[in-house]
Length: 105
Image 1 (cartoon, rainbow, N blue to C red):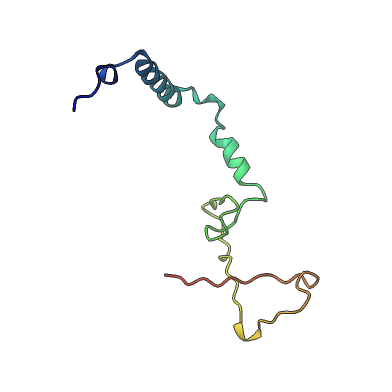
Image 2: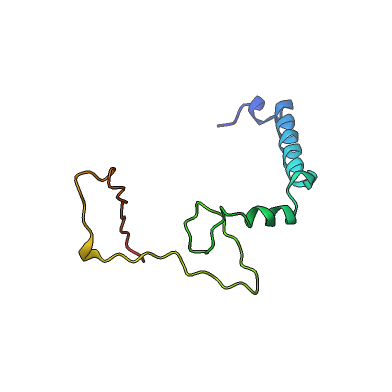
């Protein structure tokens, strides 16, 4: 079974789409990076109060690297005594938190 000649032929739209893809590729790799923040501005953002103090902190905050002479804080680990865990009938009023236990591999 031979393929129809019109399907084998390279059409103008094929060349147009290839050129568009190439230009898009070159734009993202060769664009001027002056719009990106410089390193001192980035360091200033990471030194804010909102940055995490430990690499083990939840991933919702960016991690701030410690200065060489700074003492690192302890990791954010909370120990729960499972014998003392209780619940109440009004968890929202008592501001109870949810403890999710997941196995570690």
